[in-house]
Image (cartoon, rainbow, N blue to C red):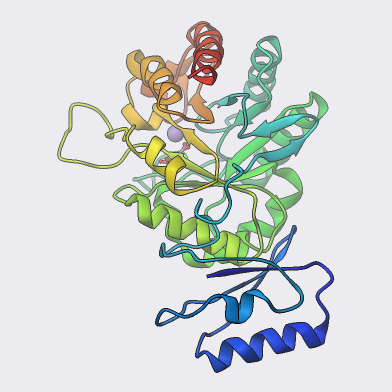
Length: 336
Ligand code: PEP
Ligand code: MN
């Protein structure tokens, strides 16, 4: 059950509401976000919702039977649109395209990526400065030094930055240099990290875990929302299956299912999803047909020289063709 409190609820009204919930043996969980205050209750048995629905200081009350509550579509019929400022949004009718290298490697690389994005009117640049790598000997990112350069060049050119945060201790120092925090597949259920990201007022894109279920992804999003941050984006990036003809199995089914279950925007990541450059564009387009609100794609001036994930990274010429096809496809999907 979600109780949306009025913005002007008085202390007495709130006290009375909490007392009534306790009388009904419902533990009240208070959630304060950047937009609204809520009380979440998990009733143990059926009860007459009117017992509290008529109390003063309440805007609305909803029954939500799902394990996740605030990210469920059962109570919020309008889809969430995330505003990154400067007319850049995620969700809604316009496709959000996030493009850039797997890893930030140098200032020159940032500059040539920014030029590529500007040329193609792409408003969000991706790039990791803290890289989760299977081997400790692989390139693990330029850290804060790289992030500052990344952010500076993007901000000067009206481009928004999405980058991965790997641990709680990084959140505070990264905060001024990030427009969207990315939670990687390996951290999809790092609940301490999700708790902390719920306390900042910056959007968070949560990738589905390597072998995470849809339910688990939504529960991870619930952590962020219930800690106070409503600006959440979900990302399907492929899951690990028995198939080894490609890097991961991009679960296109997840896209319509997530959109049916949740009001949050859904992004598709075909780069990690299939892991093979020659098929990234096809799967990106398939993701948009499946209903994705945006695409995150790895691009590089010279993918064969990329410090990470070169095999799944598009050349700029390939990316340019893809951006145009993505926009056409989204226009078509909008007419469905
Ligand atoms: C990435 O975006 O480069 C990345 C490491 O992604 P994932 O967490 O999906 O593996
Ligand atoms: Mn990558």
